[in-house]
Length: 303
Image (cartoon, rainbow, N blue to C red):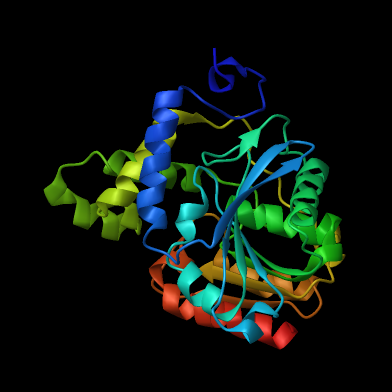
């Protein structure tokens, strides 16, 4: 019997079958194809499992010498979610996109990493395995919590952190989980209703066939086994000294945007924060060109 069906540890994610895993990988590849072509794929061995990483890079040798970018995706997804961002980012710098162990993707989790200290150790080991001593770390949603946690616990390799509608600032509320389930159910709606539901939910996956397939197969194929992360305390946030850029959607249901753009810069010295109109939880997807420009401008200012 294969490893994908024998792993039963309660807090380690797993695929339910090899067949569904392979179908999911094919769906991810279809979405990856919309972004920049990966120059390489690699597996990094850590204390917690094997981390799969995609590397993208600029043609300009001068750009390759700049501090690289590392992307950490949200829960229930994989590195394919960065397809709107990899072309612009990798034209300016080398980019690494990580499949987080414990989420559907090509990484293989063997030990839990949802505890804050273990999450920070896993990510530090991954960066070390890639030979990266200095990076601009970018995280979305759950990946935003991983990024924020890294800035608090293991900031040594971080030139900056960018948080895209992140976890880690507030306790995840019921309204967010309702939105997640409503978005999933909307993917099964009749085709004629999907554009209206996509606009109401601010969920492009509802109307894009390749995204619908990837998300629905991810839910079927993979079992996530971890609790929602707890927010960092004000004392923990106040201790962060890594340059930080916070980007929130105006209609975010994960956090209260106005509250956090006022709160975070007051706690973290020098932190910058913006609210993006016309979007909810996915500003880097809904407004990719603007967010790419803002992220690169922030990284240039840090460099």
